[in-house]
Length: 158
Figure 1 (cartoon, rainbow, N blue to C red):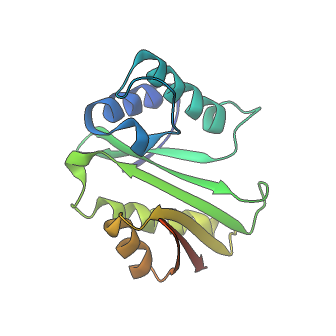
Figure 2 (tube, rainbow, N blue to C red):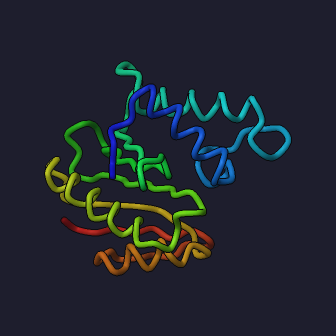
């Protein structure tokens, strides 16, 4: 289900994002018209190469979430203060067509296990008050949720 991100996987991930997600759901904002413009596609690829694939700039580990043999989203863990961090930040996005099937819950379980295996003492994530599914998933995992305006910060001691 979780496949370590590599260059071929990045191409598959971009295809999944373009087909099944809005750019604002899966990457930082890019100026210009909405939708999956060529500039936005290039920014998506550059973002993941810089953060995960380039050994000189990588700051997180990213996986392609595979569902029924197809890329359906991404999951990541980022040490908050260096490679030996006691705290890791998690992030997940899923294509719209696979949401509501319990995939996020299974992905969260794998990320929690990877964080523990990596020696992390705390698991953190951020979502929004509008994302009821993510809030429920984090709460069910035992995370403490703190609301700050439209943002929700989650912390779970491991």
